[in-house]
Image 1 (cartoon, helix red, strand yellow):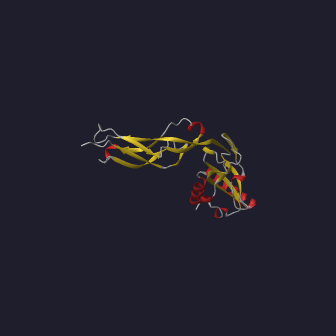
Image 2 (cartoon, rainbow, N blue to C red):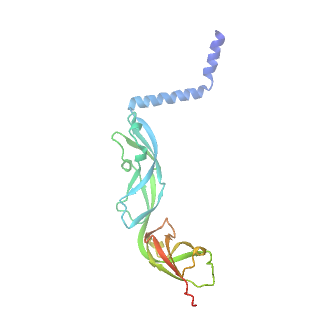
Image 3 (cartoon, rainbow, N blue to C red):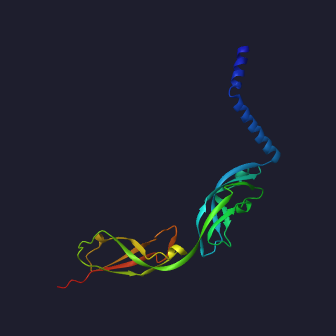
Length: 226
């Protein structure tokens, strides 16, 4: 009997410090929940900007996701729908440049009785650009060779310009907008070829092509005399 008792003592004494630590944490959590009647929940939410003036654009949000710790009554996890939550930034009155915002409970809309204990990080950085619009000439882009490279071709683009929106400073440096590549070897033998071709933004992160989205490229060859 004494041997069995000694065996049990050895089993319970293994990793005694870890077992005591786990027991202590369990008691702490039980005490915290029983005393406060609340529980904690950690979520990672996307950042959304609203009410930005029409002439401005948020070029960069750092970071674009924030981890929050929520505090609420037991069972609050059943009342929270993470896919419907986000960190909301009100951009009313913002101006171009770099802006730093400190987050608080007003940046997240939560059910009654649930509050934000912590944001990580607690401060966000926004880079805001001043937008401008400009009409820029369209230039066809070709690849490959025609079946008869010696034959001269004449081109006409319609419309000849596209309206582009983007960062005011960068937009002034753009000389033209390219079309999607046109494969010359695919052209037929007709004297006049009309192709509908899309436009390519020089940098989608800084510019948007507003109108048109496509242009007509007319390619004509000289009429052969008999």
